[in-house]
Length: 144
Image (cartoon, rainbow, N blue to C red; front, top):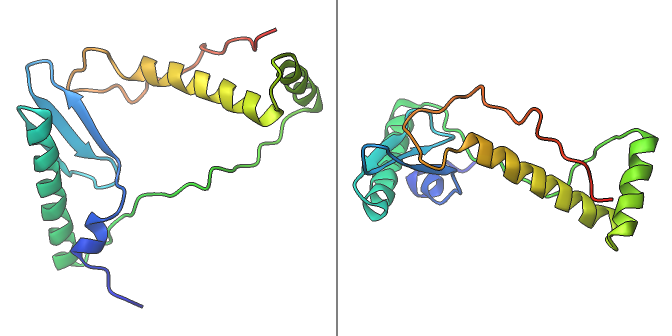
């Protein structure tokens, strides 16, 4: 088994979240690397700083023999079992919209995911997030 080095880990597509701070500047963190975070006065500065923070975090983990989490990859496919009645209603709505069932479900999932994301991420971001925020009560009826 080939030993993974710093360049291997730095080449992976880690999830980097950047927030505008209320008091000015930006805050960034790497979702998969607990405690890997930084800040900067501009987007350019925080982007460079997060790369430096990742390198320091990964180097420390490698030196100490700590297991380094890697980003998840997704195939774009998943199986979902639904009641026959819901399957029928979704298929009927897709037909009315002149879409395949797959296209219609992508539309519905994208729309709902956007609503959830907008509810979770404040337009005027602050440095604290409420992890309990959910998308309950945002379901909308499919187009008739």
